[in-house]
Amino acid sequence: MAQQHPDPHLPGQPGFRLARGVSRMLRSLDHAVLYEFVPMRGLRVDVISIAPGGEIWITECKSCRADFLGDRKWQSYLEWSDRFFWAVDCDFPGDLLPEETGLIRADAFGAEILRNAPLTKMATARRTRLTRDIARIASLRLQALTDPEAAAI
Image (cartoon, rainbow, N blue to C red):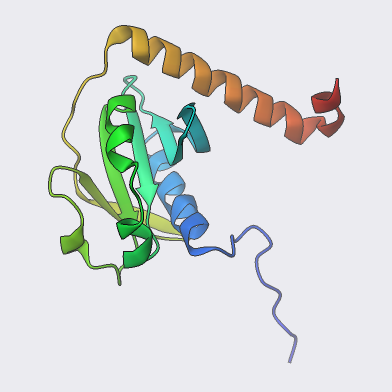
């Protein structure tokens, strides 16, 4: 019997697996998705996306209860998004998550929105800056993939 090789694109860490499933779901909704984005010094969001209408969504991926309870910064993310979601797997105790936030159940292969996040529109100046920063970081990452030596220039 032939030995099966693991998918080289499947992340090993649970949080990254959740982020992959979330990004696939968001992409199916025609969002532009970016992982590991820093909206300001000291904050790093797991997944940020721009919806077709320009809304900015942030999704924080929590792999276990301790991961959620140890997150002291999540409320700071609210001012950087129009909608804020938690992404957790099917074993995560959903009652821990604040009801005024969105809820996504995910795995490495997909995700489903169980509770939509309320819409809280950002100020226009912040949205403009954030959209520009997302585009800039995405462009730099794409260039690094296609021309790794360019980063040294």
